[in-house]
Image (tube, rainbow, N blue to C red; front, top):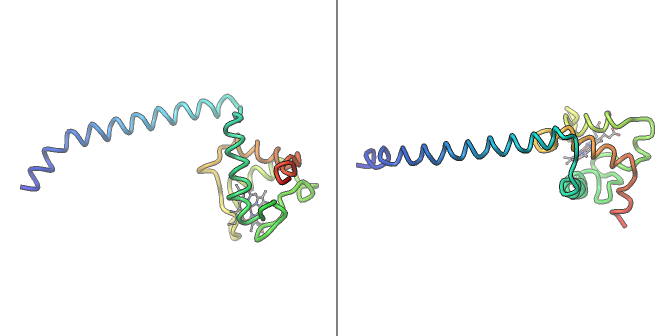
Length: 127
Ligand code: HEC
């Protein structure tokens, strides 16, 4: 009985699953396109600064002056460059609590974050 019921449902479930997959792939295409334009939109920039203060801040300190992780203020990066920061964000540091972020932060966004940290604009957010 229950077997019959579930086999009756299958075509509908398949349709639902397929439309879901189609939607997800469309979304992925669209978001990849916006990565490809090489621009971090103002909306994404806002999300990224939120992430910076809340998620990164949980280890690097609320004002990013350092905590479990080192400070992320410009003085920290005096003899380092944007790529160093970008790759640390994307791939993390194995053997330390610094996690990789590449599943939720694109290369473009990591570059934006690196430039943002180097620029010292974070100080304005902390005020
Ligand atoms: C779970 C804790 C944790 C979280 C969350 C975290 N970090 Fe880190 N981070 C660390 C630790 C610990 C180190 C030091 C690693 C080491 O010893 O080399 C580090 C190192 C770094 C460095 C390199 C600093 C340097 O001078 O070498 C950067 C850049 C950095 N984190 C950025 C970020 C950003 C941006 C985020 C948020 C997207 C973030 N981290 C989230 C723990 C964390």
